[in-house]
Length: 305
Ligand code: PSU
Ligand code: MN
Image 1 (cartoon, rainbow, N blue to C red):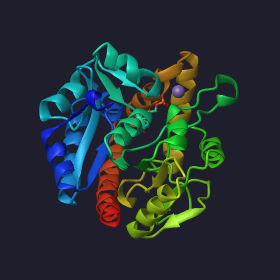
Image 2: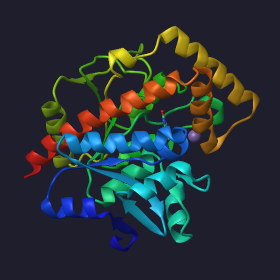
Image 3: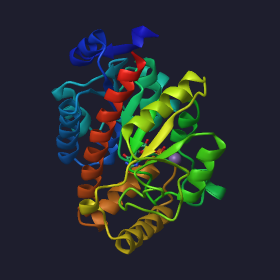
Image 4: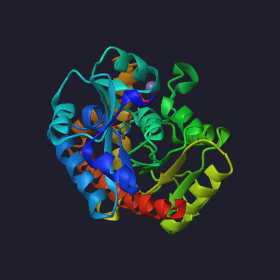
């Protein structure tokens, strides 16, 4: 297994010193945000993690290796290139075997993080059950990964391009804890709230860190979703964003979008229809998640020792 992993110098040194590491995904860079904001954001998020006492490890597939930590040039390449495949669980082995470029989704990043011994992972939003999944069966592989892989995912909830109710039901069935950070309801990415209650709430990172420790000590395999609402000053007006999401969904349907192209299409459409406001919100919430993720990694790490 080790032959497929390639650690950057920074991450490798951190591992040797036994210091906390935070995983970051690359689909958000290659398929979730436009260039150059994607690369700029990736760099800033990495720096926020360093500033809060942990080391970032952006994960991607390249040259037949799972890269754990990207150089500046590699980040730039993943942000710019049109040749990068969106890599979920399904795609990992093929992309490694054929030495192609792959940007890892939440699901694939969780797999790679676990292989690399990293327990904490920061992103923007997770995939979920799409609206209309009763007939399309479009359910993100992120949910199955959360059911089985021992990595905690800090996100701002899920976008209401998804069916949030069905997504919560799926996670409940699979026994995935969804912990609201200082909130009792599921945040919906662009907005701090949604109509869906959360049953687990943490007001402090210590509670999250202990929950992770107990869960995995007990052999209760699987991930944990930590739902961290977007900062108030960056939250979008609910009616405004929901109307835009509705039109994006309608256009996706008219164009018969399917499979892995659905989510990137919707993200780009929402950005276009909000004239870039959604992108600003997206950047702000990822940075906010980076702060919490680094704090959690530091705390969780101190409990392991
Ligand atoms: N949601 C976002 N931004 C993203 C994604 C989701 O707000 O960039 C990306 C993540 O990488 C996530 C993936 O894992 O989309 C889910 O894609 P799918 O629905 O095809 O599983
Ligand atoms: Mn899908």
